[in-house]
Amino acid sequence: MSHVTHLECSVCGKRRESGKIHNLCECGGPLLVLYDLEKIKKAWTRDTISGGPCNMWRYAPVLPVRDAHSIVSLGEGMTPLKRTARLGARLAAQNLWVKDEGINPTGSFKARGLSCAVSMCVELGIRKVAIPSAGNAASAMAAYAAAAGIEAHIFMPRDVPQSNYIECKAFGAHVTLVDGLISDCGRIVAERKDAEGWFDVSTLKEPYRIEGKKTMGYEVAEQLGWTLPDAIFYPAGGGVGLIGMWKAFSEMEALGWIAGKRPKMIAVQTEGCQPVVRAFERGEPKSEFWENAHTVASGLRVPKPLGDALMLHAIRDSGGTAIAVSDEELLDASLELGADEGIFAAPEGGACIAALKKLLASGFLNTSDRIVIYNTGAGLKYLEAFSTRFPRLTASEQDKLGGLITPR
Ligand SMILES: Cc1ncc(COP(=O)(O)O)c(C=O)c1O
Ligand SMILES: [Zn+2]
Image (cartoon, rainbow, N blue to C red; front, side, top):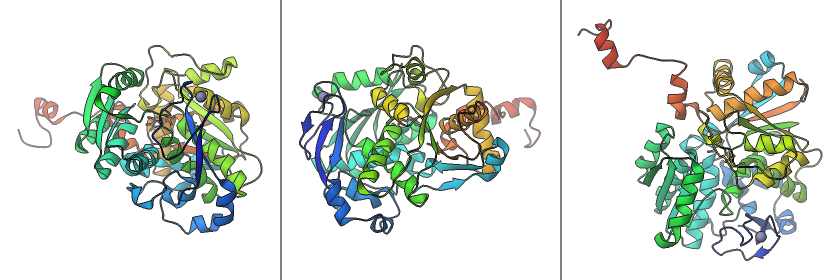
């Protein structure tokens, strides 16, 4: 299976042994997993990969799990990459594609990261995990922990979408709703984990979620016949998907699976929480904590991403950009995608469509560019947000009005 050689700190470069339990480096930097790509190149071709299972574990040789029995899978990955010609024609984007991650187990791309992280917990003998989450990572954590028979402790903002709360409860997790944001949840996990014996599965504080998420990069290349698009739109909270895809592109280049220009990586945030956009615009290497973060795209309510430096590096290296849109714009755009293409996107996915409009209008992108939008979640998970556009009287309110449909 895996050909991991070691782990390496993304900040100070210090090496760590694989097959051990790791969180952050002592310098505070996230650890990244490295593979013997030369060996993989000899044993695997991209055609062998294409013959694998129809989920993200087809890329097992470049994933960290050593023993196939450790894999905890609910069928994540190999999501549709759909050419969205009708929406494209309206926006004057002639070559527009949507990678629909809402199809994943628990309705978001978070399934990829958590499938990989929980599989590694199984491999390393970890029995109790804790996660601070903006919502969807919590749902995925709870599902994979349930599938693995591991105890899950979830900390998320009290005002997460109802779907996230109910999913976690339905999966039998221990749920704590916190009056605050993901940053406050992270603090609670950090304070309590040692006494409780929890393994901290916070974004980038453990090295394996990013490995699962990087499969979005492998998959888009495979689905486009081992070529890459001109631009990728990614709704960035913690930014792990973007960093992961960037890692996947270097691995695939080393494997000889792809060549040529990499896509412009475009990080999309919202006006109410845009630390990465601000840092990008100011030319800073890191972001600053965004005060009073608020947006209906709850996955993007991350006021200070731990991977900000890695994200900014990938955006700049790619010739990409970072851009913010308003909540109104992103809800409008989600509904346009829905009505034009039959894809009910999460607000985060809608944010990417709204950002695309701006970058076509500004000339940053050309109408002929091949563009891939990551719709990271299912619109169905955000009924409160979309209800604001389609208000409906509840049964009891109808009753008060006299019952036009049913007799009183
Ligand atoms: C639907 C959705 N999209 C995007 C994000 C942001 O993901 P990342 O932290 O990898 O940037 C999240 C995070 O919760 C999410 O739930
Ligand atoms: Zn370090």
